Every structure is written in structure tokens, then in C-alpha cells.
Amino acid sequence: MNERNYDYLKDQVKYTGFGEALEGELKQQMEKQQPTFSLKHDAFYGEDKVSAELSFRKSEQTDLYFFNSYRVSLQKEGRPESLEQTFYINKGNNITLKEAYNLMEGRAVNKDLTSREGEVYNAWVSLDFKDTDNNGNFRLNHYHENYGYDLEAAVGKYPIKELDNPSHKEDLMNSLKKGNLQSATFIKDGQEIKQYLEANPQFKTVNVYDADKNRLDMRQGKSEQQSQNGETSKQQNTRAKKSAAEEDGPGEKNEKKQRKKQSL
Image 1 (cartoon, rainbow, N blue to C red):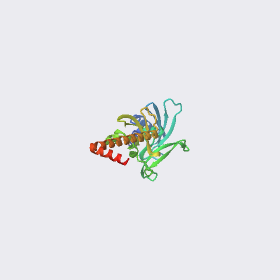
Image 2 (cartoon, rainbow, N blue to C red; image 1 turned 30 degrees about the vertical axis):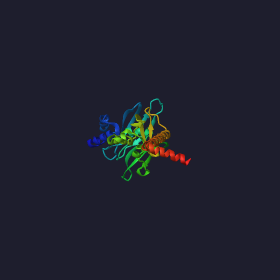
Image 3 (tube, rainbow, N blue to C red; image 1 turned 90 degrees about the vertical axis):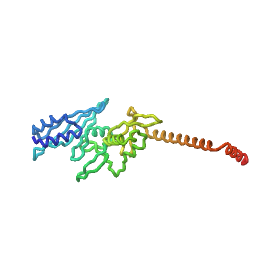
Image 4 (tube, rainbow, N blue to C red; image 1 turned 135 degrees about the horizontal axis):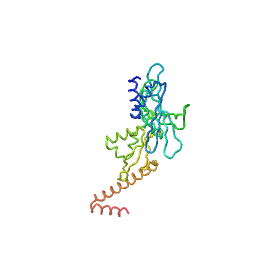
């Protein structure tokens, strides 16, 4: 067995999100020198079960093995059918297991990817559940930098407490870029409310969910915000009139009344 090859694959498996639990089995399989082999791994995200099968193939010319892909089966609680998708391993920044789960949940992930020409580029990716390739895999939608999605600006439209702290803001942005449904503290009527966010690059916005993870109708949210802004404007006008009245002395008030009578 090629020890350097084992160390490389061990790290590749680890940083693709499978941890260190498969290291022993990986070594045993490589020592057998079979043309191909696979490893299995289960994970839970909440009540959702994710089962993955990692595929390895030996080079026909050398003793090196390659981690080619992993197939994910997502079994959601209360649903009899499962969702399946294969993720391919490249030289660049691969889709991790948690990111794969997020993609299969319908969310988008921000990645630095490598083109066929070897050039690194940044893009948001999501699964197109309406389009599959010849292998039954859902195709990937790509939203490149020139698409114009500004996550920070989209999040900044909401009164979120974490945005006031640079460290918390960075954590929030990084989590959203990984495709997570991330909790955040919204300020509403002076009260702190826990809600959830997810990135939506296709429509250049973010989706907002309540504390029970029910998606909120943001058209209603905008109406409420406009209503609040209108109420604030009314209050400001009332205060301004009151302030102007207080600035007028008794003589000035009488003069105004007299001028009003004369005009009549």
C-alpha cells in the first residue's frame, strides 16, 4: 500500500465532511489492492438521515487510489421516499457532506470552484430539481459573481442584531454561504425575535422563516415595514407640530388668531 496515497485520501475524506471514522476501513480496503471499493457513512441533521457511499478506484498504471465521488441518500422524517444525488470529487474545493445535505434541501451554497481549464472562480450553486442528466443526477445551477447577488446587502435589509457585531456578522455570512438555514435575532417593535435565514441567489434576496421554520411571506413583511415607517412619519410630524407650537409665545399665538380673524 502506498502510505502517501493513504495520507492524502485520509485527509481528502476528512475535509469533505466525513471526519476520521473511516480511516481504519480506508486503510484495510487499500491494502487489499482491489480495482475498486466503497465506504459507507451515515449522518443525522436534526431528524433527517443522510447515508453516503464513497467510491474509490485504483489507477490502471500505478498503485494509487482516487476518491472519485460519493452518493448521498437523504431520508426525511415522515417521508417514505428518499432523495438521491451523486457528488463528484475534484482537485479544487469539493462539496462537503453538510453542503450536499443543504443542496438537497433546496438551498444554495457559495463555493470557489475550478473550471476545466484550471481557473478558480466563485459561484453560488443549487440543484435544479426539474432537470436531470443521463445518470439521473439533478443538474447544478450556477450563479457567478457577475450575476450580481450581494448577500451582505440582501441581509442588511432586515433589522438583525448580529449585524451590529463584526464577529457575529462574519459568522452569519459564512454560515449562509455554506447553505445553512441559520438562526438570527430580529428586532421587531423593540423586541428580540429568533427567526431563520437562507440565501436565495436566484432572486437576489434571502428567505426568512419564523421560529418554527415556517417560511414568512415577505410581501406581508414589507407592508408591515411600510406601515411602521408611515406610523413613524406621523409621529414625527406630530412631534414637529407640537414643538413648533411650544416655540410660539402667548403674544405670537394671539397675533396668529387676530390675523386669522382679519383674513375672515
